[in-house]
Length: 436
Image (tube, rainbow, N blue to C red):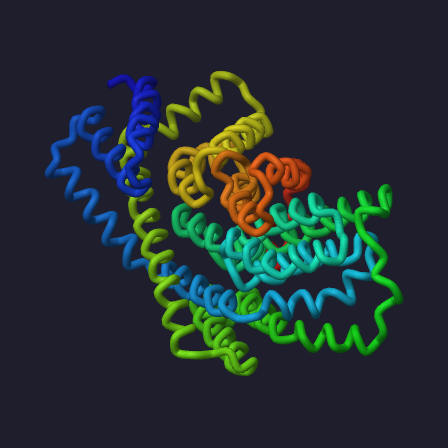
């Protein structure tokens, strides 16, 4: 088959198979097998040999150990009263800002994301405390729920991010550098969110009632004491990775131990809690692992068909500038995110997108963070945005109202992606320091 036709056939296969409603991992394997057989005329024996070799090599990858351990660390913390403690610890500091306790959504999600790589879990855990508290105190409901929906997406970007682990394994990029690269963009987005809340509340003070007197030094000290275990856990995990003392997998193991110690110190640890967290982590990890292995099979099929080179040649013939490629990918991922969850988007598109990015001269570390930032948008875009469903369950609002509340924060994510495209050093300067 002519090279120019192969990408079209592959895309048609993808839409046909996934449109049948099959599991994503099975759909990826089916597309790979059908493409190799009908497009490349490979025998099923040869296809089976290729697929089995890839599956075995991916399944035993040492880097994969980080996924169940980071998921377990987050699951243990989720089952404690850490969300209530975060609200209590952050409150004195949030009251200093215009908008008051509305900032607990942003700051709480930012801190919780540093121990939980799941976006829906971050939004649900923080929201179950902040939503009723803010409502009872008379804060604007739409701004409260919207900020939670937006800040909940930080679980995808701020390390330890499961999405960054998946990207690192799939693209053969340093997970440690990806983790470090995600810190500054995550903080920048949190600042953008808080700035937006502060501006809105300055323009309309009725959105955030006065919290009374300025917090006392004792309240600040109590807040720091409450937040200390979480801060120490975050600093320990990321610090050992940044300094090179531990690999991400080793840091994840130490993080699990740290989460157990924090839970035990707060007298909440139990065998049932641990087993529930373990079962949840096993389910999530098995799903992610099979997706990674399936995407590797699809990557092999795409390589045999020379699809990346064909598409790259098409871009060259169109004389598109590198920034145009990024703009096209940004729009493409936003549209795709309206219908598919973030992890599936990464494993489905990376085999084609990654070679294009490398050939265009972009840094793989930069693209990994950029991709996860864009994937964050899928969590708050209808009709399948997971954070929207989480938020709707917490608030009881209609789906339309939930979408309206989250929309300004979706626009801030788009603005953040544009800023980090124009100024890539926002993402790259920490990994570059790490390499010295």
